[in-house]
Image (cartoon, rainbow, N blue to C red):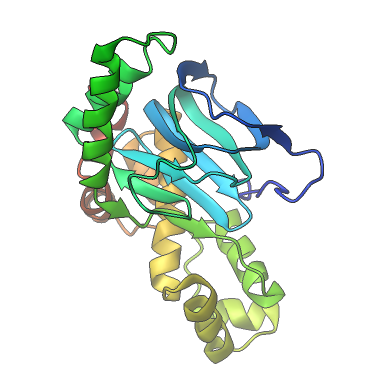
Length: 259
């Protein structure tokens, strides 16, 4: 199992594209879009596959029932897990229907999905009908619940070392105390760091990590039982229950959904 590797977003070669594009494009499994930033806001949606968007703060991940809001000026990189149908919607910097200044994962219901697909179908269309489509899309964005699908980047080296161990083997059953013993940090210190840096407990963070790895493997058509075993769940049924509560559908239908 390979580690999650975060892009070096602070690298001086970050591309600057003033306007955030509105378009639809395909990415092959594993394909990346290197770190870049826009002067506009952007909505990033994967009609199929699993999308990961990485900034200095961490990695946001989204299957087809989620979209990612990327605020203007945020340096970010994309990666496709599975074949990705990518849909991008750019909005001017003074048009922030969500009032958000940090990347955020949003729930995408059937209506918002169809609006995004229709709006990105022909970026050159400047008809009144398309302008009305955008107005409804913005209304739906405002009504979309936010979803905490984020793997934050650790700044403390002790926390980063523990996170790397879990990412390297999501099925690792060790407790926080045992992981601390392996890295030279106390359980109490690590527990404080998880809450202080990530705003969540170690079990909550590990579940997020395991779900991310599970989505990546499901996008590659790995069987559900195998994914459950590789990602640390005690049984396929336990995995299915957590997955369904997190995403609203079962892992067995992940690559068959009509999204």
